[in-house]
Length: 72
Image (cartoon, rainbow, N blue to C red):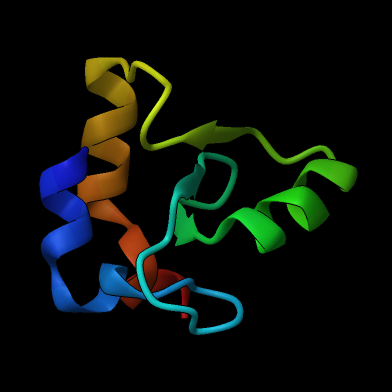
């Protein structure tokens, strides 16, 4: 999953454009910052931390297929 954050569209939060997103929103397939992840959690999005979570093969594949370039 960390390799995906090195792709240009994923280097910034999909919502606020902050550099170096720390989380993923698995509900929509976006890379987001910690602040925006809190907002997304309030609306029941499935959020995982890039630094502290493990990801299934299906989650990684979904993020490869979607990512910030398709979400935005």
